Amino acid sequence: MKVLLDADVQENALRADVVAGLTAARKWLPPKWFYDARGSELFEQITELPEYYPTRTERAILTSYAPEVARLTGARTLIELGAGYSTKTRLLLQALPLTAFVPVDVSPSALAAAAEQIGADFPALRVHPIVGDFTRHLGAVPDTPGRLVAFLGGTIGNFEPAARARFFADLRAVLRPGEHLLLGTDLVKSPRELVPAYDDAAGVTAEFNKNVLRVLNRHLDADFDVDGFAHVALWDAAEEWIEMRLRARWPMRVTIPAVGLVVEFAPGEEIRTEISAKFRREGVEKELSEAGFALDQWWTDDGGRFALSLARA
Ligand code: AVJ
Image (tube, rainbow, N blue to C red; front, side):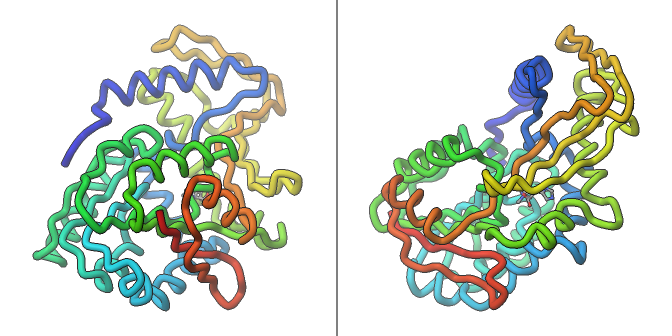
């Protein structure tokens, strides 16, 4: 396992994000800090919730089109960004004539579990996990011929438009002409369907959201009263994204000794913890083309909920 984010680098990045986010006029925290071992576990539970359609929908699309991906790309190396436990990836591993699989994720626990399982199930495959941040470590992906980069699950939706443009351009710069990107995007649909996907009846997403506060308590010795915050999920119709927030139920003063901060919360004050942008075909095609990718295929489920794009560098 190649570790580009050792514990020290991670702690420093967390500190910097916490200082920037919690001293801002409108408080925010980046979603990557959800994913300690417990957060990765909670996310796996989310993917099985009845309200959370993206994972099973993307899996259905992959099941239908993985052979097409194999035929159209002939990829020999699969690089998966934000791989997590790589459960859907198996569909690609089975369909593609691969020699190497490179899962990249910020969570070493999820990566180690995935690498072990996949190594056992696909003994001929060389598995090279990278613990890294795909916004910073694209340069570390191996330069072998015939690469396919998979960025599944709709995680691209965590980026705001400017960051998305930067990410697509950086990725394009790493790839050679003719190599491919397989991109999963959740699609714009009624908030009646979108909002419950981020505010499930069983409260798993609420626990996932609050987990970021537990991460801060553990790593920065903070004293967040986790139950003093309510989970909020709302649809921003202008931006076409879901926003998750944590709303202070009452006034609070939180100390975060590791960064020397005391953070005050007014009752009702919120921390934005995630955006999850939803897409339309025109937008995806335009953004990819501006980064130098050609959209070769656009596959969706029958309900038009989710899309897989195959783009060529
Ligand atoms: C992992 C970023 C794709 O945005 O749907 C799920 C994360 N947050 N429920 C998403 C998430 C709340 C998920 N991604």
